[in-house]
Amino acid sequence: MNGPLKLLLVDDETGILETLQILLKREGYAVVAACSGREAIEVLPDVRPDIVLSDIRMPGATGLEVLAAARELDPEISVILMTAQASLQSAVRAVNEGAYYYLQKPFQNDELLAILRRAAEARELKAENKALRKEIHRRDRTRADRPIGRARSFSSVLDLAETVAPTDSTILISGESGTGKEVVARWVHRLSERADGPFLSVNCGALPESLLESELFGHVKGAFTGAVKDKAGLLVAANGGTLFLDEIGETTPSTQVKLLRALQEREVIPVGSTKAVPVDVRILAATNRELEEEIRRGHFRSDLYYRLNVIALHLPPLRERRDDISLLVEHFLEGYGEGDGPHPIGEEAMAVLREYDWPGNVRELENALERAAVVARGEEIEVGHLPSRISEPPAPQLVSDGLPPNPSMEVIERAYIQWVLAAEGGNKTRAAEVLGIDPSTLYRKLNRYGIEV
View 1: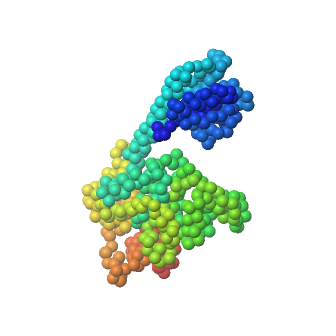
View 2: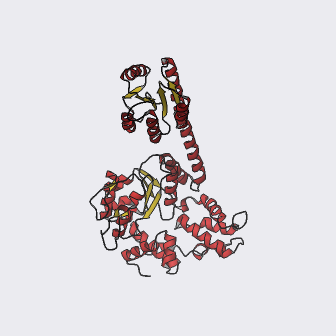
View 3: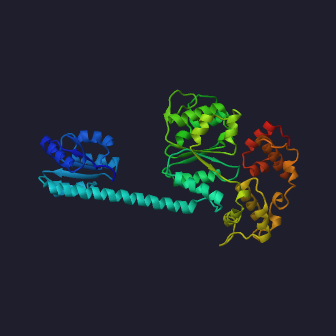
């Protein structure tokens, strides 16, 4: 253990209290003395001792009450009870209620010190076993839930995520739409110290500003039309857990200011209220935008960016990890197969999947395989079962035609949206799925870029 063991000594007899205090300090214990059971119960939360050595018969609060308070605070605290009027009945009761040992006065100093050493060793052993079980559980979760992929560019990101997951550091996950940012966020949460707490997510690009602020920070009754009762926001609802902010780059400057304050102060003020509510939540954020470019354009606050970007994870697009396509295909088709094995896929169809550039990344691959499995009706998936945009991709001129030299990200995004819309025959719902965004986000982008379908 690190540092001396903390021992709370409790006895209403001043002479015994002082004698034991001198003895135990000499043995290297960090001793806090209390001259009554009530005083001991009051100081327990502040002292948080490793061991409690308490008399049983005391006015106000007995040693059994001290035992109950210590066990409620921390079941791992070793409590040793002392009494000059021992009886078999009281000893059995003390042990049944969780006492480590029942010691009869008067006792020899060597006897007491031997019991304390055994109590310390037992506590240390419990702590080691608890840490070992936790590490085994964490490794089991790592093996079972690790996102699929062996490409070096992807594995290196996962290795870093695994390293920082047990901390409370804020993480900013970047990458194109459909690369699996939320999958990685959920995996980080499962490996974290908050794994037993909630994991909540919100798509910041799918909600208008007023509704997003209400979702994040909550509101009080009467704050706006329709606010018929108080509502806790996601930052409060995720207490003890993780909140995932997807498409953080779509937030307005007003929301960014309030979010920055919540991160700095660890408290939120619900819409329509003046009272701050403390929060204990880890923030994971994701974006498919180049936030540094958004900062230069004045669309995103630099102070919020640096607050979010404590740990940066950038997920590579699927076209840069083609060796993982077969692994992902096998994984997705297991869910669509009938009987014992995964749904079969032909070699030619697999070759087409490996050659396609996957602008919608893993999400587009999953959607394409689900469609193919339905169309194939249990038979082997062939090229003809794949969506036409994959089996018969349009000429690449559709993407680059009319683009100026060194185009900006906005120009590229506009051209890409037009290309996907053309490939999907103008179907906005399907285009949004391929782009990996909500239909509402697509509509805003269409208005922003003046694209007519």
